[in-house]
Amino acid sequence: MGRRPSEPGTVEGETMPEGKTMRWNLPDTELPTTWFNVVPLLPEPIGPPLHPATRQPLGPDDLAPLFPMALIAQEMTTEPTVEIPGEVLDVLRLWRPTPLVRATRLEKALGTPARIYYKDESVSPAGSHKPNTAVPQAFYNKAEGVARLTTETGAGQWGSALSFACAFYGLECKVYMVRASYEQKPYRRVLMETWGGSVVPSPVDEPGHPGSLGAAISDAVRDAVGRPDSHYSLGSVLNHVLLHQTVIGQEAKAQLAMAGEERPDVVIGCCGGGSNLGGITLPFVTDPRVRLLAVEPASCPTLTAGRYEYDFGDSAGYAPMLLMYTLGHDFVPPSIHAGGLRYHGDSPIISALVRSGRMQAVAYPQSKTFEAAITWARTQGTVPAPETGHAIRAVIDEALAAKEEGAERVILFNYSGHGLLDLSAYDAYLRGQLVD
Image 1: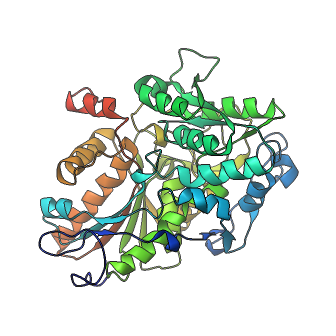
Image 2: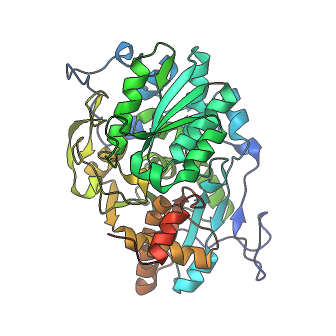
């Protein structure tokens, strides 16, 4: 268990009337300058990606039609750290380091002795953690002379982030948005178009289909390989994406120390492909005293009900095959509002951690997650993304368990994004129209 928070006045930050610091900010001079690579520290090596046609291990040349060589090298590296280019740091400093905040009002409402901290990734220009990898991906593609990127997006957070990053580097951005989300979240499309992205519903050849992330990936990969000026960009799952997100956990470690905490007892993140979960948890993997918890939707329970095997990363079988927990690449999840969690598989890194027992996983129905999100909004004040509501549900359950046990548990979670462009989902919940 982490030790007691430091006495009032020992750190700078926003304070409550009783003098307890509730927000910890790092100066931008303490922004991490390297990414943390967990791959060499995993309990056992993860299987290599396989060619979708030959089913043989992929080499750099096989991935070159999709990614720049710098990202391919990061995908395969076993170095413990990777340096962040100065040009990337310059853009990240627009919003990073992000605050660490203590959720004291939620603690009081629950009557728990647990201390709840969250990393507020909603302060990025795109409103989520996604720009942490969108910026370096756009940078490396620009450096290799690529003019155009294609991608998929579920709820629209990733498409927004990549459109934002492409605007900074003068790249065209084509986004294939899962049709269910395209229809549910029109303002996400407007945000992408504001940054110059071109957005179409997916699957493009089945107008009546609700879509899935797997189908949208197929559309984006097919587009990229068909044009010499284009590459494909993925917002989750792959090793280099989780690598870029580790700035979150590295900052959180430093900020918890500022708050007087030795370590968290549990670190929590929602999980679709694994990027925000990996970002907050991976820097804590080496400390066996810290529990790691993945939270997923019950309607797409890859970690809790999937098979651990090689499967295609997309629906059509164009993308590489990955060793991961999967529900099958042709699985089409229900059109829940947490569109960023509607993926049939998971990151090989996250899958390996769950398989080894180093990380636990739990699944919730969407009504329970919206119940938790409403509780959060009415105590802490901010409106979380539906995806983030899954993490909050687990946080509340952990805090209530601590109350029952009388334990001063330290809980850290990733507040991965705001829900201000997801209000149609809240409208459905508040009107009793949300279906599990």
